[in-house]
Image 1 (cartoon, rainbow, N blue to C red):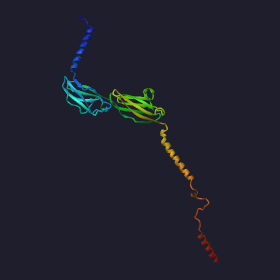
Image 2 (image 1 turned 180 degrees about the vertical axis):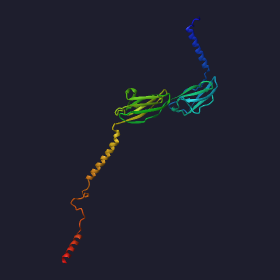
Image 3 (image 1 turned 90 degrees about the vertical axis):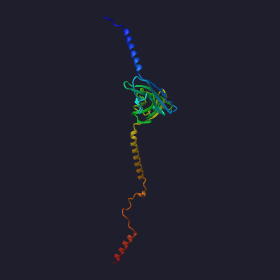
Image 4 (image 1 turned 45 degrees about the vertical axis):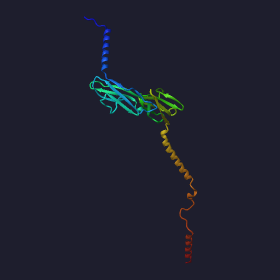
Length: 281
């Protein structure tokens, strides 16, 4: 009966086998030479940048090559060439991201290389102002372009001072995801919450800020239009009453004057003449 092998020796043999397999696998993997990472300057605009990749060695037949940006294939970049390039004209912050050249093969998995194009954040959208009633919920947001994704912070500006907002206050909630941030304020207070709020995006290249204005109205704000209509009606009634009281006296008929037309002197003289003629006869 054979004795069991030395456990240490078995472990060493196993590790050696793994190393040999890894070495063989590494030798069979395709080799890709890619251009260096690029950082876009903040103060000037480059006329063009060019990303390049070259498939130097591959154990299997090369089929196609193409480019991706942030995991999505770039349209019209597929080719059968081993040396490929992608040009970006007048690159800006929205062009920054993680670019990848991808090579496919007949009977092997795809191979790729990554080129990062970095830039400072540029805030491209935000809520300029928000009008809410006290006790309601307000939502402010900012979104940016640029790479890497920024670290977001919010500040409340109060005259010359400012303070950073976090989630520990109980009424302020911040939600960040990549190039988007959102600030929610619940149970709005008309005294302390109105004012300017600043979102700040910061990454290793630079930072950007943008300001939003929050206005908080009283609970009576929805009644203001109705109160305005009632005020107009009251003013109109007062004008009518004052006008009626200030009418001229001759515009009002006198109770002592007869209602019918007055008789003229010619009519009375004609009656007297007829009376004398009757007495003569």
